[in-house]
Length: 442
Picture: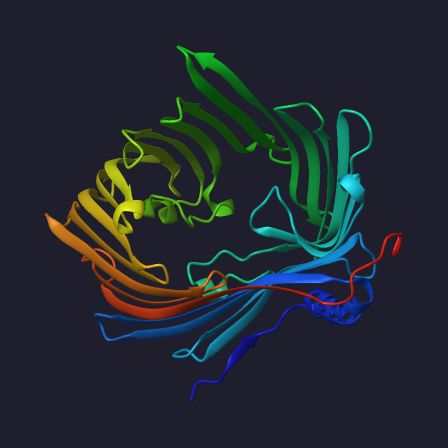
């Protein structure tokens, strides 16, 4: 029998949980309100070669307001996962911190494990302080032990590193100016004399609104960049333009530059991203137009350049167009039909995709999808990959949803498998003590 492997949270995580539990005992004294969400997902996957993977993932988020003091709250989010076939489990506390926030947010202090907004794979075990005095400029400073999420194709190995690193930094940001955003920041991460990363960052954004040809026009523009001081090079750069016209036309344009190794290709469009460990340049746009309140058409494209390990650059392109229909009020149905073209140095593909959601009753949801792709690679010609999905969902009340799903995939270039599973989502909230009377706790 394979021995059970269990990854325990680090000392900071255990300390944070213990503190949160003790503070929860004080909630009745101050009329705390507790809310959160529990999600459980079980899925079993069987590959063509006979291998099986059965995994259970449980996620819990928790927010408690007004503990110990009306301005004090606590927030936590974690996961417990278990792979039954590998007899492997892991527990991760993604964040767990106390927050002191004064009236109108003039001062905001976080203590514990909190996410760092400038890096989606980094949390900090320490303190974050944000001050918003009178005037146009606010300030935020943070410091503590850095905890990077180990990036691994095996999701069970994406755990927080135990490297003893230190991170600190600060940010100045614009406040109180309508429809305008701006910030400038600095951060240092390292251990002793070793510098992991030293960054100077900045960003600016602006919202515009006017009338064009008698129709309302809204435009939002944002840009940001991180400059790596120890490498004397741009670490990341991003630009975004969003346009909304006549309540019918929506156009989004984005351009990004970053390191693939620092931005794990989760939710990205190109599979070939996993072949690169260098720079990636990505430009994306989508156009969405409502023909009427029910039917809309859209077109989107993604253009990507990747720096490969040998120093050369490769490109990839995705072109997609389609139509969507919202017939919820007429027959409880909404659907999407799209076609797309993919081109890269590893494969060319042309495909179609359909998604249908039907609500025969206000408590039941039926979903189905089909994707068929014709793949042409240098080694093989005209391969066909298909994916068929189905789901039955039941929502007895707004806070509870359960679903059963099935997926059949047949991809000659990657893996073919049959996947089944169930999902449960539960939102909860309840008072944890008496309400404060006027003047109490101040």
